[in-house]
Length: 146
Image 1 (cartoon, rainbow, N blue to C red):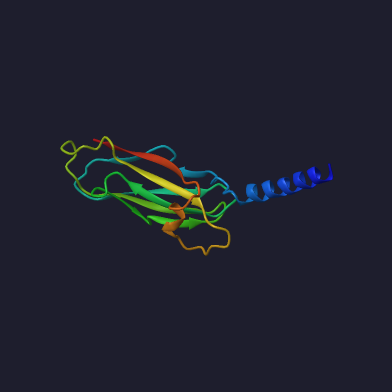
Image 2 (cartoon, helix red, strand yellow):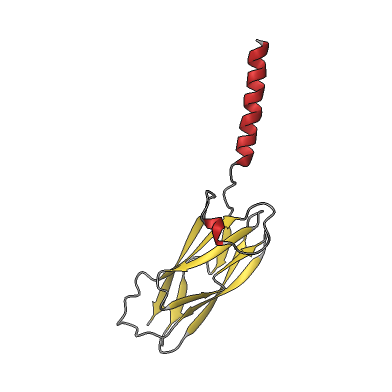
């Protein structure tokens, strides 16, 4: 019985260490606007729309934007790091294009974010998104008003 209790105690301690070592899922972010980005005609000149990204979680996150149309849509800055409750203002730009002559149905930007490693400097690293840690995504469709 004593050996069994000792084995159970070692097993429980081992499981606690494993549980603590597993990555914590990234918390929520908030974007303003929350669901889509709208650009208004005319489209013969560049348009810029600002969105606010807020880290609503209790952990530092690294974030990066992707777009489905690199030729037409730009994001500046494209990536960064936010401390808990910190916000960043992001410029989303739409270059001039021939509205009605180009397919815009699938245009969107996607923000991806992940927790930064404990003790990491507050400098964005692409490697954070390539490991085993969980990465969350939020899609923001682009709507073009004629």
